[in-house]
Image 1 (cartoon, rainbow, N blue to C red):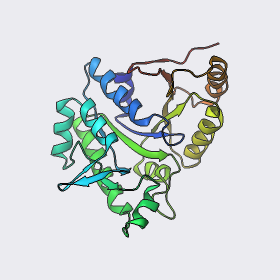
Image 2: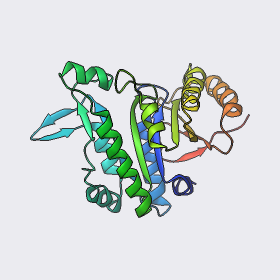
Image 3: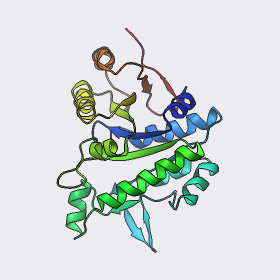
Image 4: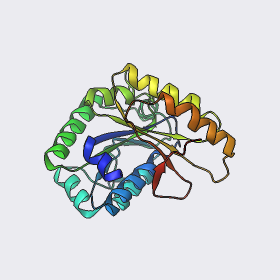
Length: 239
């Protein structure tokens, strides 16, 4: 199921409804699910906040988790494209919106250069038939500059999005706002994943999220559930 999804779209931007929605866990599960189905896939973290810089390299938990989940063929693809598979493309120390973290450090986030680099990487992935996940930072509308958000970057790249949301109270509103923001920018949604980020979500809250989100999804977009502690996806159950 996951290998088919990745082959169909080639390059996917993985974004979320908010911070800690489960994007990295979802990316790790996508990479490992694809590998179990015989498909190597690559993943990159373009921008990361809250990292540590030591001995000339950035250490960021999300990027390291992606690195650990990738097959060696995918890591080799990234290295061949000039990307360190264990590091974000851009990183900042403070765990806050990238534009704010950059300002605090007296830096500018080089959005144009980042866009070009991701565009080249996406084109290389298509040429090599290497599925590529581009994991966002925070939610879809997290600012990357005074005028641009991650959703705008995805629109500029011309790739579809996979949206990750939690199953807790508020999931419906957060997901529908995210879908609306992407649609307004012309970003197609390839799939929606609801992630159980805690083991004790009340069943009635989950069922209401399933029921209200499903009819509002784009046609043909799979609606998937990632259970707490799992690395396998399943279709969201119907009532």
